[in-house]
Length: 114
Length: 115
Image 1 (cartoon, chains in turn blue, orange):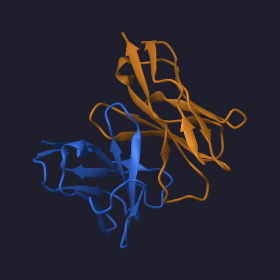
Image 2 (cartoon, rainbow over the protein chains, first blue to last red; image 1 turned 90 degrees about the vertical axis):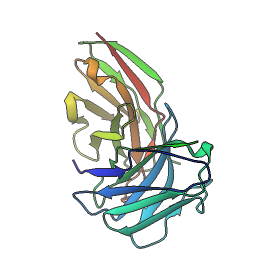
Image 3 (cartoon, helix red, strand yellow; image 1 turned 60 degrees about the vertical axis):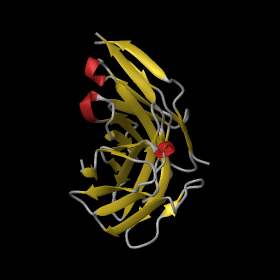
Image 4 (spheres, rainbow over the protein chains, first blue to last red; image 1 turned 120 degrees about the horizontal axis):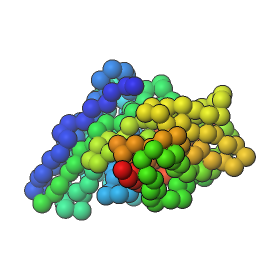
């Protein structure tokens, strides 16, 4: 299957700092990428849809000014958690599918905000 | 509205026994159905999908799933469970003509296979 990478795999930061997470499709072009958040032992919550070359579409309740998404190329989308607080600690997962019916997921990024 | 239900939070099975993880869905039109597996602190791995064609779909690691339109179900099965199959399993759906849209996930079912 297709390969999607995320970097970093885990990050610990102080409250008030910003953290950038990268999502890359390694062997295909992804016109659309998705960002999810997952709490322990729970399902994935869609945060936003990232479209190459245009603004992201955020789900209801997700603060677009706090979770900045940039999809500058067909292989890279970034999620920046701005002014992170402990309640932002979570597992963030991206997915990409290009023109395929199947979504392929990155390995996830564990964010811990102290 | 589209939705997916996984009625069981946890399924326990002994190694070597068959396993079933249940999933039912609600979607307008013909559904696109998926199963993913997640190991601790890892992303989701694609197992199999149903788009059209044979109702029995075979996927990775010996898993299969049967699409049942009348029961709106897409249960995941494996004839003989392995301890290494222990993980969190997600069923997901999207509607037809929705290429490029996000999948809707069930809440997940933890599969525990004992030796």
